[in-house]
Length: 219
Ligand SMILES: NC(=O)c1ccc[n+]([C@@H]2O[C@H](COP(=O)([O-])OP(=O)(O)OC[C@H]3O[C@@H](n4cnc5c(N)ncnc54)[C@H](OP(=O)(O)O)[C@@H]3O)[C@@H](O)[C@H]2O)c1
Image (cartoon, rainbow, N blue to C red):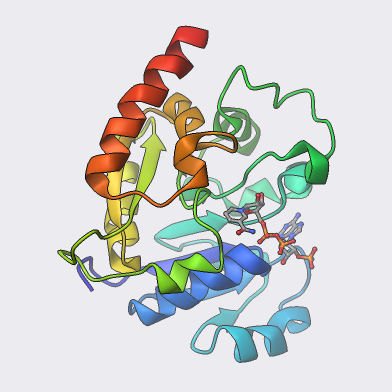
């Protein structure tokens, strides 16, 4: 592991939440996981699927070095945002109308994470981990320096938060590529080439430059 061990709080114990939590445990981090329900409801699931992580009530995620929101986007308004205040938060969520239904606020004119940042309030939001399938997180993970190591884009308006998250991404087994501000997160949302494939850091930088030109030309 390259970064120092962190305390990671994961909100959402579905496909993405448990997959990220498993990788984080493997990387040596302390991991807590919660949903909107009492901890007791996910204790068994956590023991079986994420051994080494602790099932907690959502308020017990507070104080973590890093929080990860892995909740279906159409449920974002049901998230207890008091848990997130003053924290560095990773937004893994994607908008996909066939699953989420039509949501006017996600009309493509802004990154979904910009909309989420407004709703969350006083959080230091970082967009990443949305463009890797939950089933790929373990198999595509490689130590730093491995040839053709997969890269993930990291977008945020907060430079320190982005640096913390980049170290975390590295510890999970991926090169973190700075994608720029949160608005640039559109470059790796659903429907983009980055979203659809696996890329090395070099390929990711080239694609980000290309996609950002398109995204900011649209703005
Ligand atoms: N599937 C992928 O490969 C993938 C990859 C990257 C990103 N994503 C994105 O990640 C997000 C989550 O996807 P998923 O496939 O992990 O969903 P999922 O399997 O349906 O799991 C969602 C989890 O969120 C919890 N939840 C729902 N509402 C909540 C609330 N208000 N507060 C706290 N927890 C709540 C659910 O708990 P309950 O049982 O209580 O409802 C469940 O544990 C989506 O936006 C998706 O687009 C998906």
